[in-house]
Image (tube, rainbow, N blue to C red; front, side, top):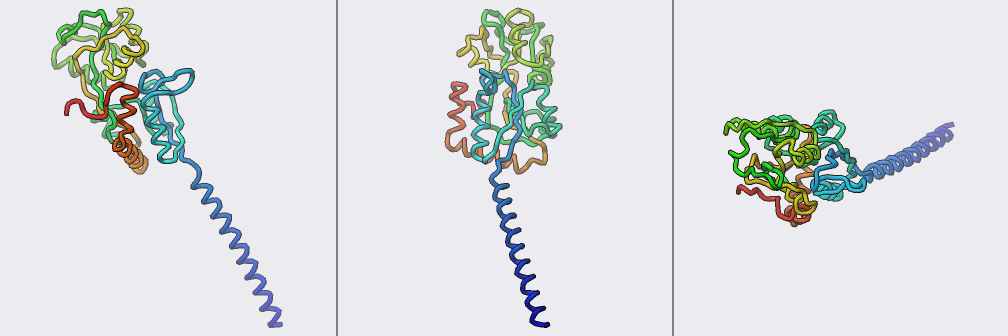
Length: 270
């Protein structure tokens, strides 16, 4: 009787051990498969902001796209790009529909810095008053009582208001949701000019034959960085490490030369 009991206990123990080993193997396999699955990062961009992020034949291209594709490659991430107007991108970020905005986003804005956790600065750009090529507007005084377009809710609007008040220019600020309508209204003479990023406008003039000119009137210098939710510290740290690596290797500067014809990764005021 005792021998049979011992034998039964041995059999039960053996089955438990075998079952346990099987579960451990399955769990180990599941963990391995899970670790191989690439993390998906939602990145909001504009589809008409050449050469930063734009669509050509339904394909996203531009400086921001190249940078984020490289960040994804370095971290084994997949990127889910969402295309929207600038005014809608931050609403998507606030509601968790995207993880960040990649559209030459300024980190200079104090209100924005209080709300979001920004990556390190990766690009610097002056924003100038831009007019039609045949315009007689040159000096800041020439822009008194003119109509100037801005993207609604952007830093261009905020800083033009400051410039307007400081110099008593009497500029009528006209808000737009996107840049194509602004550019069209400049060409049609509905507005006298707009606040525009020098880098983007320079390439539009040189490569697309845009009939504009960049005046020497700088509205502000933008320090571009990527905004994230405040609790995304690990994500921001990984992005910063990749940006630092790209800067050290010269890859970030090469991408700047590729898309802008100049190195915009250094502060022009330093």
